[in-house]
Length: 549
Image 1 (spheres, rainbow, N blue to C red):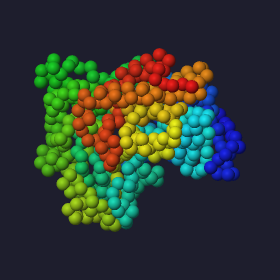
Image 2 (tube, rainbow, N blue to C red):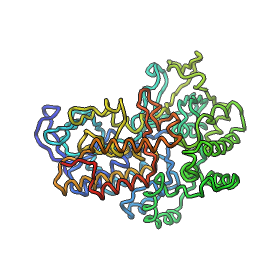
Image 3 (spheres, one colour):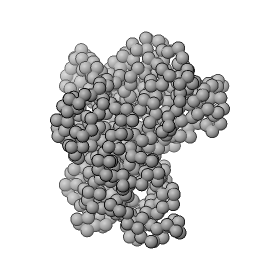
Image 4 (cartoon, helix red, strand yellow):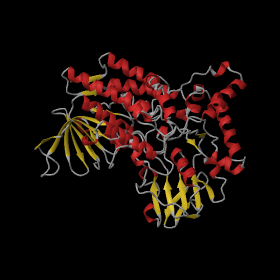
């Protein structure tokens, strides 16, 4: 659909203003689907993305070893059976290059790229109360006048790039995993430092270990890990999954985390210790996140259950570390329970630490003080000399991508300033005070962290699209979550979170990885199925809690 241009005031005197019905920020999983749905509704819609191509997370995160840990049979779009069957993945957990190709395949199949403006960062979005529309500007100075803004910015798309003092003084190469060069980085035979051992750091470490001359791994927070089982998929095997399309589509909407597995074992209290171990062994061997999200939900609430499950995983890790006291102390968590952090899948990660050319630096006892020209200086005064520094230090999750855009709502209120005080949303779909702004992957929804992302992002896109469609049929021009609705959701979210052990653990789930970030569980932990039910009920009741004018 062609962009409609009107010669109204723009940020550049010689540039016209682009006038749209809807503007989508982002061309990843959510952005592509949101563009498709709104275009199918007949809206004049355009997507904008900072990248030079589609993919979102799978465009930017092209570091060595990047792959997703949702099984490919459910990391899918569900609006088209033909689309599902037309793409044959190569393995259970495909790597980044294949995933990027898949998303380009989707975009080409749906002819979406003609309505996406690449290499364009949205700098600001200001609401106009006089006519209920938004004035949006790009970093290049383009102005867009739009009724709706659909923020599909991604939950992990605001990297913590400037993490340590002195980074600019380093004489070698320094790269953040979330902004890895498309041309790649030559690490062969070099001295490499990896800072961070979360899910991303683990993938990098296990992948580059065979190629580097030396590797120094800076470990602050140890992680429970589960070995990934990643078989190749033949055409015949994929056809078996394809034959289950409708069942899978229905299933993922109802489970706790949006996967095709769920907590379906007998309750912990009804099992003997031996029976509990049998369940844990079964899911450990399964080689997926089912060890976390399909064994015992009691581990999230009951400290005694958490202790048993955590000890089980610790034992598995100790075996692989050959019971080395130093490595076990450094790499096996002891101060939080299994599952209260993001659980990474891995393939040979722990064994890397047994290599002669690998050194693990304990950042709990000797934190990184600064980056110097030769490498990394720790608090004991030692300088670790390296050629390349890889920063796997994470993101300002959930809220960061939205906070980095100058959103101004009614009365000129600033979303960035509000979220410095308290991070709030109405079901992760809207924020009170910002009419006609809809969000996916935002705080206080399962999609912020605790979900198979394709499941949750598509559900949110569908709900948002239906809500806009409803308002249009009613002749309404603006949609805004009321303060009461947002207050009620925040209370429900917090009450649900408070019953779990997750809120007692410092992690990016709680915003603890960003200095000064308000502490609140970023993701709704009441379950995907429960969240979807509440969204469906809200829509069926005519969207009470949303003021439409």
